[in-house]
Length: 264
Ligand code: DGL
Image (tube, rainbow, N blue to C red):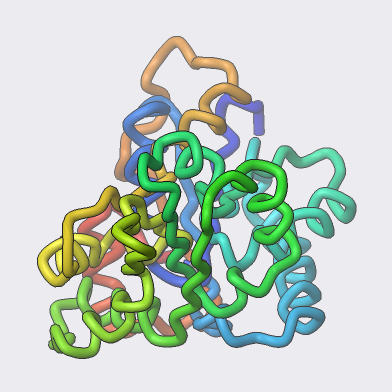
C-alpha cells in the first residue's frame, strides 16, 4: 500500500473518539479512516494501570498489522495518558497523536483562576495529568473531578437511551466551585465521550462556563504531521469501524453507520 492509501487510525475505548474523527475528517477529507473502539475493554476509566497499558500495547500489534495505518490518533485521554509512552516505545516507526486533558489552554483562558477537569477516574489519577498541572497551570486552582459514570451515560445518550438529568447533574456538580466569589469559569472535557453529552451539561450547569473540547486541536495536530494529498482519493464510504468485541449490537452498528463507517 502506498502511503497515500494507508488509513489514519482513530482509537478509543468506545464512541468517544468519534468526536475527534468528525474534526479529523473535516481537516483531512482526502484521507481514509479506520475507527477502532475497544468496546470489549470499555470502560477504561476503572482499569488497573498495568493491565490496561499491556492490553493497549498488545492490541496495537494486531491493529498495526491488520490496517497498516499512516498515523494513529489515540482519541482517548484515559488510554493516552497511561499508554502513550509505551506505545511510542513499542512501535517507534508509527506516529501517534495523543489526547490529554486541555489543561494548558484552560489555564491560559481562565479569568477567575478556577479551572475544573472532568474526566474518568483513571485520567485524574495519572501522573501525566498532575505533570500537566504543574507545568502549565501552577498559577491556577485546578479541581480534578473523576466521574465513574459519565462515559457510560454518554454511550447511552448517543444511542437514544434514557439518561436522567439528576444523575448527570450529580456527576458534574463537583466541577462548580466558588472560592470567595471566584467561580469556576472553565471545565475541561477530559474524556472524548463527553462532548456528545455536553449540551446536557450546559443545560444543567449551575452557572455558565466554557466547556473545553480538545477534538479540533487533536485533529489539527494530526493534519500537521501528514502531507496534504492532491486529490480526494478516498470517499467517506471507504471508512470502516472495527469493534474489538466482534459483535456490536444493532444500536452500535447504526451509530457507526450514521458516522459513515462500515462495521468491518
Ligand atoms: N473516551 C475515553 C477518554 O477520553 C474514556 C472512556 C472510558 O472510560 O473508557 O478518556
